[in-house]
Length: 409
Image 1 (cartoon, rainbow, N blue to C red):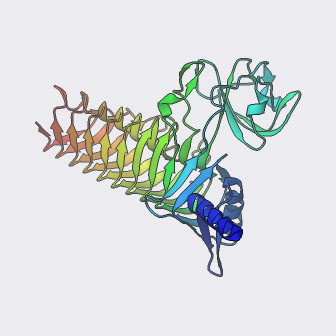
Image 2: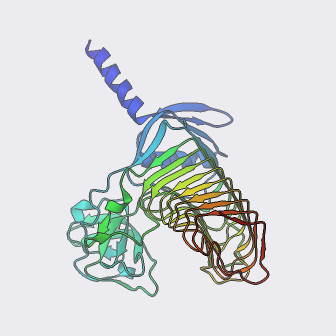
């Protein structure tokens, strides 16, 4: 009887946490989920052997620190749609850790009031108490001792930062998958749930409003400061996934060539739901739903992007084209086709450097005025419907714009 009880208890645990089946061309093995640290080791080993598939069973898979990894390629993640759930741990330490003395960034050390709330191997970010300028640094913990917190690495992200001041807030940096220069990656049928109301997070008693590189879904990063570099990430495909309850972004790709985001749902995400970022090229976002958040889709300094058959609801801005790098070689050749935007602050906003954009067969309902703010040049606005969008459905068109076949109802 005791053995049967043990078996039943273990089976129940595996059902809750789920299993993963790792498959290569030569072998396959099914393993119980341990944690995201063990998972990262599996990813690296699978990539080193030429890639393969990781199939997640139905169940909940907890991520305690998130997977931070470089250079993996050739991996497909599959899940059971609606039943495979990646879940971030609770953020009990959020807003409770502050620096008590100034330290130099080069010293790779922090002095904080509650070191017991930090963990070795975990990643953190620092912010001014008023959050001005965004995050000060990103760091991971190497050791914790009587003299403070020693850092394994310390990346200053705030301009000209040489010192972390006393009184800075230390918050956890945790993302499901935060990868550097990844290639040939597919993610299908997985729900990524941050598990919180993002509006509940605070720093110094004020809402957390500036961070967008923590508490995110999928971050595909690569160097983008040198425009002569070829895209370092390639061929990212995300399909039939759900991104929800995140304080950061849902999906983002920097300097990546060949991106597909298809049949995904984004909901209750504080910042950008889906972002195609600096120097990325050839991206397709199709058949997706974006509900809430600052932007549904944000396009920063990227080329060759198509957004089609998507629904946007209750975003501050449905699609935001941002000129951040101020480089004339970026923000070109976008197509926004057959999308619906309803109850949004604005439907589409395009910065002045954006050019060669087709906006066709879209419906804007109860969008702010103007529903489409089309600065920039060579913007084609054709055969769209504007319903209850105020007195000015679209803004003053830029140079060589084409306006034809649009209806105002």
